[in-house]
Image (cartoon, rainbow, N blue to C red; front, top):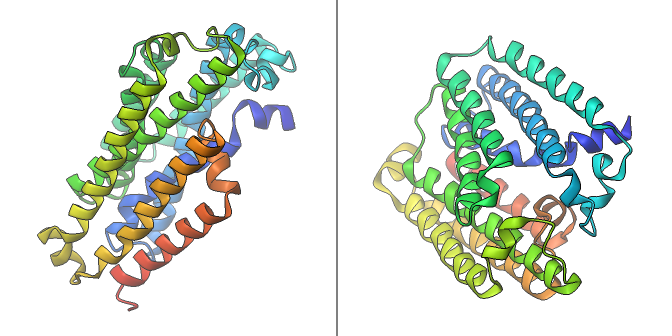
Length: 291
């Protein structure tokens, strides 16, 4: 059972938490109907993303066998056969298709688009320099849009831009970490697109993306629409948490080379965990008029 949980990468489901962004910032977080609907949407995206993870592992099975960490995954290690993995893909797609029938057409289309985008990523986009990280960013933006569509609320353009930049940042930092691993092992076969990147180029991209996150989020907190909707200017005080989180992530990558596994960083680094908790708490307290 554990090997199947590893195959569908349950630990990566945390990335789908972006589906909750619209309900948090639309002031509906504590309304049961909205919350249950968003939880269901989150579950669908977990199944959809697991489908993509399995497809991607099937496509990359040979390359992963030469990677110092990925070789231990169920498929490249031989713990699960390709035929069994294909059967898992079919089952997951059926579950996603059936579940989507209970939602509006906008959510269905964005979920289908998310799956299609990631299929293209698995077979093509991930081998095209720059387009690979932009595909990752688009996937996160689609999660946010899905969260808005499923409960039919508007979403701020600044929040979408913030999501795009933070996902670009994480994608570039992942490439930087992979480049470091490849350089250390003198092995370029684990991911073809790495041959088109350099550490210096990845550093420059990371700097731009990090600046984009901070600027877009700061502008969102002081935008007239934001102040009008929340009836407060205090959201700007959550910006330091965002800045610290970005800097902490860069520190962990550049000083410890831990940027390849985003989920592991968020789940195991104590300062990062504390920052995320404090950010969420401060945001809820401010926009829901607790303070």
